[in-house]
Length: 408
Image 1 (cartoon, rainbow, N blue to C red):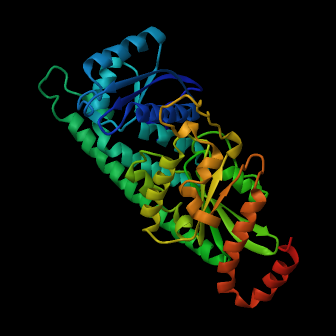
Image 2: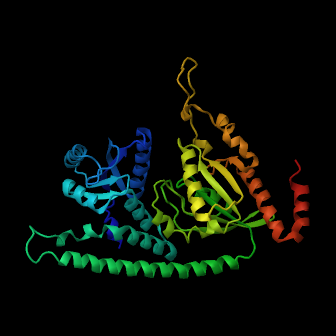
Image 3: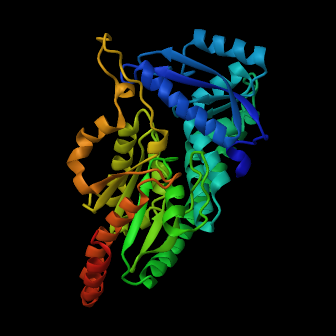
Protein backbone atom coordinates (compact mmCIF):
# COMPACT_ATOMS: atom_id res chain seq x y z
CA UNK A 1 0.00 0.00 0.00
CA UNK A 2 2.86 2.40 0.68
CA UNK A 3 3.86 2.54 -2.98
CA UNK A 4 0.23 3.13 -3.95
CA UNK A 5 0.56 6.89 -3.68
CA UNK A 6 4.28 7.65 -3.89
CA UNK A 7 7.34 5.47 -4.32
CA UNK A 8 9.50 8.27 -3.02
CA UNK A 9 13.23 8.71 -3.30
CA UNK A 10 15.09 10.73 -0.69
CA UNK A 11 14.67 13.86 -2.75
CA UNK A 12 12.51 14.38 -5.88
CA UNK A 13 12.37 17.40 -8.15
CA UNK A 14 8.84 18.70 -8.65
CA UNK A 15 6.79 21.45 -10.26
CA UNK A 16 3.62 22.86 -8.72
CA UNK A 17 0.49 23.64 -10.74
CA UNK A 18 -2.52 25.73 -9.71
CA UNK A 19 -5.38 27.78 -11.12
CA UNK A 20 -6.59 31.36 -10.84
CA UNK A 21 -10.39 31.24 -11.03
CA UNK A 22 -13.27 33.66 -10.41
CA UNK A 23 -13.49 32.27 -6.88
CA UNK A 24 -9.72 32.19 -6.29
CA UNK A 25 -7.65 35.31 -6.87
CA UNK A 26 -4.04 35.32 -8.03
CA UNK A 27 -2.84 36.26 -4.54
CA UNK A 28 -4.85 33.39 -3.02
CA UNK A 29 -3.62 30.94 -5.66
CA UNK A 30 -0.02 31.89 -4.92
CA UNK A 31 -0.62 31.46 -1.20
CA UNK A 32 -2.04 27.99 -1.81
CA UNK A 33 1.03 27.13 -3.88
CA UNK A 34 3.24 28.35 -1.02
CA UNK A 35 1.45 25.89 1.25
CA UNK A 36 1.70 23.17 -1.41
CA UNK A 37 5.45 23.82 -1.62
CA UNK A 38 5.65 23.40 2.17
CA UNK A 39 3.75 20.13 1.86
CA UNK A 40 6.12 18.98 -0.89
CA UNK A 41 9.13 19.86 1.26
CA UNK A 42 7.63 17.93 4.17
CA UNK A 43 7.23 14.90 1.89
CA UNK A 44 10.86 15.20 0.74
CA UNK A 45 10.41 16.84 -2.67
CA UNK A 46 12.33 19.84 -4.02
CA UNK A 47 10.17 22.42 -5.81
CA UNK A 48 11.86 23.60 -9.01
CA UNK A 49 9.06 25.61 -10.62
CA UNK A 50 5.49 26.89 -10.35
CA UNK A 51 2.79 27.26 -12.97
CA UNK A 52 -0.46 29.20 -12.63
CA UNK A 53 -3.16 29.60 -15.27
CA UNK A 54 -6.24 31.80 -15.27
CA UNK A 55 -9.31 29.71 -16.15
CA UNK A 56 -13.02 29.93 -15.39
CA UNK A 57 -12.91 26.29 -14.22
CA UNK A 58 -10.45 23.36 -14.46
CA UNK A 59 -10.18 21.67 -17.84
CA UNK A 60 -12.03 18.35 -17.61
CA UNK A 61 -9.30 16.54 -19.56
CA UNK A 62 -5.99 18.01 -18.38
CA UNK A 63 -6.88 20.44 -15.52
CA UNK A 64 -4.94 23.23 -17.31
CA UNK A 65 -5.22 24.21 -20.95
CA UNK A 66 -3.24 22.59 -23.78
CA UNK A 67 -0.88 25.56 -24.12
CA UNK A 68 -0.05 25.61 -20.41
CA UNK A 69 0.45 21.84 -20.42
CA UNK A 70 2.96 22.18 -23.26
CA UNK A 71 4.75 24.93 -21.33
CA UNK A 72 4.98 22.62 -18.30
CA UNK A 73 6.22 19.78 -20.54
CA UNK A 74 9.03 21.91 -21.96
CA UNK A 75 10.14 22.96 -18.47
CA UNK A 76 9.97 19.36 -17.19
CA UNK A 77 12.09 18.04 -20.06
CA UNK A 78 14.61 20.88 -19.86
CA UNK A 79 15.12 20.56 -16.10
CA UNK A 80 14.81 16.79 -15.60
CA UNK A 81 11.73 17.08 -13.40
CA UNK A 82 10.24 13.81 -12.17
CA UNK A 83 6.96 14.91 -10.61
CA UNK A 84 4.12 17.43 -11.05
CA UNK A 85 1.93 18.28 -8.06
CA UNK A 86 -1.49 19.86 -8.65
CA UNK A 87 -3.11 22.01 -5.98
CA UNK A 88 -6.59 20.50 -6.42
CA UNK A 89 -7.92 16.96 -6.64
CA UNK A 90 -7.58 15.34 -10.05
CA UNK A 91 -9.90 12.78 -11.59
CA UNK A 92 -8.54 9.48 -12.90
CA UNK A 93 -9.13 10.76 -16.45
CA UNK A 94 -7.14 13.92 -15.79
CA UNK A 95 -4.25 12.00 -14.21
CA UNK A 96 -4.10 9.55 -17.14
CA UNK A 97 -4.14 12.36 -19.73
CA UNK A 98 -1.52 14.45 -17.92
CA UNK A 99 0.74 11.43 -17.35
CA UNK A 100 0.47 10.53 -21.02
CA UNK A 101 1.56 14.03 -22.01
CA UNK A 102 4.26 14.77 -19.41
CA UNK A 103 5.59 11.22 -18.89
CA UNK A 104 6.29 11.90 -15.19
CA UNK A 105 4.62 11.13 -11.86
CA UNK A 106 1.42 13.11 -11.25
CA UNK A 107 0.13 13.90 -7.76
CA UNK A 108 -2.63 16.10 -6.41
CA UNK A 109 -2.86 17.80 -3.01
CA UNK A 110 -4.75 14.91 -1.41
CA UNK A 111 -2.30 12.21 -2.52
CA UNK A 112 0.57 14.36 -1.24
CA UNK A 113 -1.10 14.79 2.15
CA UNK A 114 -1.77 11.05 2.30
CA UNK A 115 1.91 10.34 1.70
CA UNK A 116 2.86 12.65 4.58
CA UNK A 117 0.23 11.01 6.78
CA UNK A 118 1.66 7.56 5.96
CA UNK A 119 5.16 8.80 6.82
CA UNK A 120 4.11 10.44 10.11
CA UNK A 121 1.75 7.77 11.47
CA UNK A 122 3.29 5.92 14.40
CA UNK A 123 0.49 4.20 16.35
CA UNK A 124 -1.78 1.41 15.12
CA UNK A 125 -4.71 3.82 15.28
CA UNK A 126 -3.08 6.42 13.03
CA UNK A 127 -1.75 3.80 10.60
CA UNK A 128 -5.22 2.25 10.27
CA UNK A 129 -6.79 5.65 9.65
CA UNK A 130 -4.20 6.49 7.01
CA UNK A 131 -4.70 3.16 5.24
CA UNK A 132 -8.46 3.67 5.23
CA UNK A 133 -8.06 7.16 3.76
CA UNK A 134 -5.69 5.81 1.09
CA UNK A 135 -8.13 3.14 -0.04
CA UNK A 136 -11.03 5.60 -0.06
CA UNK A 137 -8.91 7.93 -2.20
CA UNK A 138 -7.92 5.09 -4.54
CA UNK A 139 -11.37 3.57 -5.10
CA UNK A 140 -12.72 6.09 -7.66
CA UNK A 141 -9.32 6.18 -9.40
CA UNK A 142 -8.96 2.47 -10.13
CA UNK A 143 -9.12 2.81 -13.90
CA UNK A 144 -5.68 4.38 -14.18
CA UNK A 145 -4.13 1.59 -12.08
CA UNK A 146 -4.75 -0.89 -14.92
CA UNK A 147 -3.36 0.91 -17.96
CA UNK A 148 -1.34 -2.21 -18.81
CA UNK A 149 -4.67 -3.94 -19.57
CA UNK A 150 -6.02 -1.25 -21.88
CA UNK A 151 -7.24 -2.37 -25.29
CA UNK A 152 -4.48 -2.35 -27.84
CA UNK A 153 -5.69 -1.01 -31.19
CA UNK A 154 -9.17 -2.44 -30.54
CA UNK A 155 -8.03 -6.04 -31.04
CA UNK A 156 -10.65 -8.77 -30.75
CA UNK A 157 -10.57 -10.49 -27.41
CA UNK A 158 -9.09 -7.47 -25.60
CA UNK A 159 -12.36 -6.06 -24.26
CA UNK A 160 -12.82 -8.12 -21.10
CA UNK A 161 -9.74 -8.59 -18.94
CA UNK A 162 -9.15 -4.96 -17.95
CA UNK A 163 -12.72 -4.41 -16.89
CA UNK A 164 -12.84 -7.74 -15.06
CA UNK A 165 -9.62 -6.95 -13.19
CA UNK A 166 -10.92 -3.52 -12.21
CA UNK A 167 -14.11 -5.00 -10.79
CA UNK A 168 -12.12 -7.66 -8.92
CA UNK A 169 -9.83 -5.00 -7.49
CA UNK A 170 -12.81 -2.85 -6.57
CA UNK A 171 -14.28 -5.70 -4.53
CA UNK A 172 -10.93 -6.29 -2.81
CA UNK A 173 -10.64 -2.62 -1.87
CA UNK A 174 -14.25 -2.41 -0.67
CA UNK A 175 -13.61 -5.46 1.52
CA UNK A 176 -10.46 -3.83 2.93
CA UNK A 177 -12.33 -0.57 3.60
CA UNK A 178 -14.99 -2.51 5.50
CA UNK A 179 -12.31 -4.38 7.48
CA UNK A 180 -10.43 -1.16 8.34
CA UNK A 181 -13.64 0.53 9.47
CA UNK A 182 -14.31 -2.41 11.80
CA UNK A 183 -10.75 -2.19 13.13
CA UNK A 184 -11.26 1.52 13.82
CA UNK A 185 -14.49 0.74 15.68
CA UNK A 186 -12.54 -1.67 17.90
CA UNK A 187 -9.85 0.96 18.47
CA UNK A 188 -12.56 3.53 19.23
CA UNK A 189 -14.04 1.23 21.88
CA UNK A 190 -10.62 0.75 23.47
CA UNK A 191 -9.96 4.49 23.47
CA UNK A 192 -13.41 5.14 24.90
CA UNK A 193 -12.57 2.83 27.80
CA UNK A 194 -9.24 4.64 28.25
CA UNK A 195 -11.02 7.99 28.39
CA UNK A 196 -13.47 6.67 30.99
CA UNK A 197 -10.57 5.35 33.06
CA UNK A 198 -9.11 8.84 33.22
CA UNK A 199 -11.86 9.72 35.64
CA UNK A 200 -13.37 13.16 35.97
CA UNK A 201 -10.21 15.17 35.39
CA UNK A 202 -10.71 18.30 33.31
CA UNK A 203 -9.69 17.77 29.69
CA UNK A 204 -8.03 20.47 27.62
CA UNK A 205 -7.42 19.95 23.87
CA UNK A 206 -4.97 21.89 21.72
CA UNK A 207 -6.43 22.52 18.27
CA UNK A 208 -5.35 24.62 15.34
CA UNK A 209 -4.00 24.78 11.83
CA UNK A 210 -1.02 22.60 11.06
CA UNK A 211 2.41 23.99 12.00
CA UNK A 212 1.14 26.69 14.37
CA UNK A 213 3.19 25.41 17.33
CA UNK A 214 0.76 23.12 19.18
CA UNK A 215 3.38 20.45 19.95
CA UNK A 216 5.92 23.05 21.09
CA UNK A 217 3.29 24.49 23.43
CA UNK A 218 2.42 20.96 24.60
CA UNK A 219 6.06 20.36 25.52
CA UNK A 220 6.26 23.65 27.35
CA UNK A 221 3.12 23.12 29.44
CA UNK A 222 3.57 19.42 30.17
CA UNK A 223 7.39 19.36 30.33
CA UNK A 224 7.30 16.38 27.96
CA UNK A 225 9.10 15.48 24.73
CA UNK A 226 6.34 15.42 22.13
CA UNK A 227 7.83 15.47 18.62
CA UNK A 228 7.84 19.02 17.25
CA UNK A 229 9.26 20.16 13.93
CA UNK A 230 8.84 23.03 11.48
CA UNK A 231 6.97 20.78 9.06
CA UNK A 232 3.31 20.35 8.18
CA UNK A 233 1.63 17.49 10.06
CA UNK A 234 4.65 16.92 12.32
CA UNK A 235 2.13 15.48 14.79
CA UNK A 236 -0.38 12.93 13.51
CA UNK A 237 -1.00 10.79 16.58
CA UNK A 238 -3.03 12.21 19.43
CA UNK A 239 -0.91 12.67 22.57
CA UNK A 240 -2.36 13.04 26.07
CA UNK A 241 -0.33 14.28 29.07
CA UNK A 242 -1.26 15.05 32.66
CA UNK A 243 -0.43 18.66 33.50
CA UNK A 244 -0.41 20.28 36.93
CA UNK A 245 -0.51 24.05 37.20
CA UNK A 246 0.25 24.79 40.83
CA UNK A 247 -2.22 22.53 42.68
CA UNK A 248 -4.64 21.85 39.80
CA UNK A 249 -4.26 18.70 37.64
CA UNK A 250 -5.84 18.35 34.19
CA UNK A 251 -5.31 16.37 30.98
CA UNK A 252 -3.79 18.14 27.98
CA UNK A 253 -4.23 16.68 24.47
CA UNK A 254 -2.24 17.53 21.34
CA UNK A 255 -4.23 16.78 18.16
CA UNK A 256 -3.54 16.58 14.43
CA UNK A 257 -3.42 19.95 12.69
CA UNK A 258 -6.04 21.06 10.17
CA UNK A 259 -5.38 22.36 6.69
CA UNK A 260 -7.25 23.98 3.80
CA UNK A 261 -8.74 21.87 1.02
CA UNK A 262 -8.79 18.77 3.23
CA UNK A 263 -11.20 16.33 1.54
CA UNK A 264 -14.21 15.12 3.51
CA UNK A 265 -13.12 11.48 3.51
CA UNK A 266 -9.85 12.45 5.19
CA UNK A 267 -11.76 14.22 7.96
CA UNK A 268 -14.01 11.16 8.26
CA UNK A 269 -11.02 8.83 8.54
CA UNK A 270 -9.58 10.85 11.40
CA UNK A 271 -12.82 11.26 13.33
CA UNK A 272 -11.62 8.79 15.98
CA UNK A 273 -8.45 10.82 16.53
CA UNK A 274 -10.61 13.90 16.94
CA UNK A 275 -12.75 12.18 19.58
CA UNK A 276 -10.37 13.79 22.04
CA UNK A 277 -11.59 17.15 20.76
CA UNK A 278 -15.24 16.14 21.13
CA UNK A 279 -14.65 14.95 24.69
CA UNK A 280 -12.60 17.98 25.76
CA UNK A 281 -13.95 20.39 28.35
CA UNK A 282 -11.85 23.29 27.10
CA UNK A 283 -10.44 23.96 23.62
CA UNK A 284 -7.21 25.91 23.22
CA UNK A 285 -7.17 27.22 19.66
CA UNK A 286 -3.53 27.91 18.77
CA UNK A 287 -2.99 30.45 15.97
CA UNK A 288 0.20 31.41 14.15
CA UNK A 289 -0.20 35.16 14.27
CA UNK A 290 2.95 35.65 12.19
CA UNK A 291 1.23 34.02 9.19
CA UNK A 292 -0.05 36.65 6.74
CA UNK A 293 -3.45 34.92 6.46
CA UNK A 294 -3.95 33.63 9.98
CA UNK A 295 -7.58 34.77 9.97
CA UNK A 296 -8.43 32.40 7.12
CA UNK A 297 -6.65 29.61 8.99
CA UNK A 298 -8.87 30.36 12.00
CA UNK A 299 -11.95 29.99 9.76
CA UNK A 300 -10.69 26.62 8.41
CA UNK A 301 -10.20 25.31 11.96
CA UNK A 302 -13.59 26.60 13.10
CA UNK A 303 -15.34 24.93 10.16
CA UNK A 304 -13.62 21.62 10.88
CA UNK A 305 -14.41 21.89 14.59
CA UNK A 306 -18.04 22.49 13.69
CA UNK A 307 -18.00 19.25 11.65
CA UNK A 308 -16.31 17.32 14.45
CA UNK A 309 -18.13 18.73 17.47
CA UNK A 310 -21.48 19.35 15.81
CA UNK A 311 -21.55 23.01 16.66
CA UNK A 312 -21.44 22.44 20.43
CA UNK A 313 -20.44 25.42 22.52
CA UNK A 314 -17.24 24.58 24.38
CA UNK A 315 -15.16 27.09 26.35
CA UNK A 316 -12.35 28.24 24.06
CA UNK A 317 -9.12 30.09 24.66
CA UNK A 318 -7.51 31.75 21.64
CA UNK A 319 -3.72 31.52 21.88
CA UNK A 320 -2.00 33.76 19.36
CA UNK A 321 1.42 32.11 19.09
CA UNK A 322 4.71 33.09 17.42
CA UNK A 323 4.63 36.75 18.43
CA UNK A 324 8.43 36.57 18.27
CA UNK A 325 8.14 35.95 14.51
CA UNK A 326 5.53 38.67 13.88
CA UNK A 327 6.72 41.35 11.44
CA UNK A 328 5.10 44.34 9.75
CA UNK A 329 6.12 47.19 7.47
CA UNK A 330 4.96 50.67 8.61
CA UNK A 331 3.60 52.82 5.81
CA UNK A 332 5.38 56.05 4.92
CA UNK A 333 3.53 59.21 5.85
CA UNK A 334 3.22 60.24 2.17
CA UNK A 335 1.94 56.80 1.07
CA UNK A 336 -1.80 57.29 0.40
CA UNK A 337 -2.58 53.72 -0.69
CA UNK A 338 -4.84 51.68 1.63
CA UNK A 339 -3.09 49.82 4.40
CA UNK A 340 -2.85 46.04 4.15
CA UNK A 341 -2.34 43.33 6.73
CA UNK A 342 1.45 43.71 6.29
CA UNK A 343 1.24 47.36 7.46
CA UNK A 344 -0.52 46.67 10.78
CA UNK A 345 1.46 46.27 13.99
CA UNK A 346 0.75 43.62 16.62
CA UNK A 347 -0.52 46.24 19.07
CA UNK A 348 -2.95 47.55 16.45
CA UNK A 349 -4.13 44.01 15.73
CA UNK A 350 -4.90 43.53 19.41
CA UNK A 351 -7.30 46.47 19.19
CA UNK A 352 -9.33 44.93 16.35
CA UNK A 353 -11.82 42.04 16.73
CA UNK A 354 -9.38 40.37 19.12
CA UNK A 355 -10.11 42.98 21.77
CA UNK A 356 -13.70 41.72 22.02
CA UNK A 357 -12.42 38.35 23.26
CA UNK A 358 -11.29 39.89 26.53
CA UNK A 359 -9.71 37.33 28.86
CA UNK A 360 -10.24 34.52 26.35
CA UNK A 361 -7.25 35.61 24.24
CA UNK A 362 -3.55 35.57 25.04
CA UNK A 363 -0.49 36.45 22.94
CA UNK A 364 2.54 34.22 23.46
CA UNK A 365 5.70 32.73 22.02
CA UNK A 366 5.91 29.01 22.79
CA UNK A 367 9.44 28.99 21.41
CA UNK A 368 10.81 31.67 23.74
CA UNK A 369 8.32 31.20 26.58
CA UNK A 370 7.09 34.80 26.47
CA UNK A 371 3.72 35.33 28.25
CA UNK A 372 3.43 31.63 29.12
CA UNK A 373 2.64 32.51 32.74
CA UNK A 374 -0.32 34.54 31.49
CA UNK A 375 -1.58 31.51 29.56
CA UNK A 376 -1.06 29.23 32.58
CA UNK A 377 -3.09 31.57 34.76
CA UNK A 378 -5.89 31.64 32.18
CA UNK A 379 -5.85 27.84 31.90
CA UNK A 380 -5.86 27.55 35.67
CA UNK A 381 -8.95 29.74 36.03
CA UNK A 382 -10.89 27.95 33.25
CA UNK A 383 -9.95 24.47 34.45
CA UNK A 384 -10.70 25.35 38.07
CA UNK A 385 -14.30 26.28 37.22
CA UNK A 386 -14.89 22.87 35.63
CA UNK A 387 -12.97 21.03 38.34
CA UNK A 388 -15.15 22.53 41.08
CA UNK A 389 -18.35 21.41 39.36
CA UNK A 390 -17.06 17.83 39.66
CA UNK A 391 -15.23 18.09 42.97
CA UNK A 392 -17.02 20.83 44.93
CA UNK A 393 -15.44 19.66 48.19
CA UNK A 394 -12.05 20.89 46.87
CA UNK A 395 -13.21 24.49 47.00
CA UNK A 396 -11.30 25.27 50.21
CA UNK A 397 -8.03 24.22 48.55
CA UNK A 398 -8.45 26.77 45.79
CA UNK A 399 -9.53 29.49 48.20
CA UNK A 400 -6.36 28.91 50.19
CA UNK A 401 -4.31 28.96 47.00
CA UNK A 402 -5.97 32.07 45.63
CA UNK A 403 -5.40 34.06 48.81
CA UNK A 404 -1.74 33.14 49.19
CA UNK A 405 -0.50 33.13 45.60
CA UNK A 406 -2.64 35.46 43.47
CA UNK A 407 -2.22 38.54 45.61
CA UNK A 408 0.54 40.68 44.17
